[in-house]
Amino acid sequence: MSADYSWSLQPGVLVAVAGAFAIYLRRWRRARAEGGSRAAGAWRLAAFSGGLALALVALVSPVDRLGEQLLTVHMAQHLLVADLASILLLLGLTKVILRPATRRLQRVEAAAGPLAHPAFAVFLYVAAMGTWHIPAMYDAALEHPGVHVLEHLSFAAAGGLYWWHLVSPIRSRLRLGGLGPVYYMVSAKLLVGAVGIVLTFSPTVLYDFYAGQPTFWGLSHLEDQSVAGMVMALEQSLVMGVALVWLFMRMLAESEREQHRAEQLEPAG
Image (cartoon, rainbow, N blue to C red; front, top):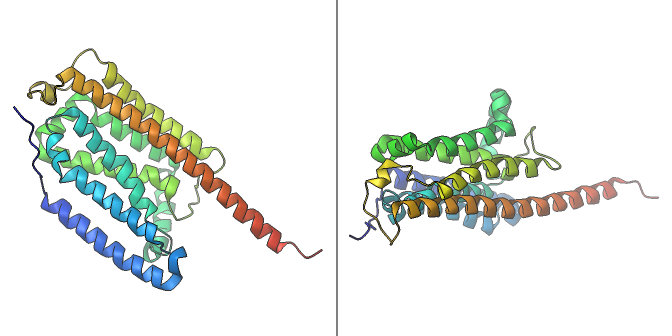
């Protein structure tokens, strides 16, 4: 028996992605007209478009259908939504592009209180990843379409908030400084990676939904679960490593700008 590679082509996802792209493209063009490439470089458009493309890959391509047959593919789908698509979408934003909503976002942050703290973002990210991988929750998401949609929405929200504190173009009053980004990344990624390790080395199949499915790609149900766990743990490690290098380079660039600004303000002589 061969796997089903059909496209799901969910209308709600297609309309949402098309609408998001249209709104972003209009704002990107206006920001570029007002401030040039510094306000909205072409790579920003490419990043945002890439994020939307990954969302489509995860939610309407054969990846969505295969995720109902193979745990490994379902795991990849989760990671695309929570990490990779979220990162690219946020990298596509600038203060100029967000300008109509910047003050509103700042007011929301002030009103949110402790919910706007980076610690809450870590908690939400780890809780979403951990909770939805509990066998009863995972099986429920696969058996009930409405629960599956809720699962994807929670991953998108948790991933978006988590990465917002690291790559947001708006300087937050709770912005992570010093070694804060390192602790922020390590605390979340190690905890989520631990979930992957549990799946990798579990001696039994944890999810009844997949245990009742035929086997595909020459993988037994237990092997499929082990590979899915390895994908999760490896992705968390790789993303953490790349993100930390990028954050370190950004920190150096900001330090150089601050030093240059200070030198310009020094009185002659």
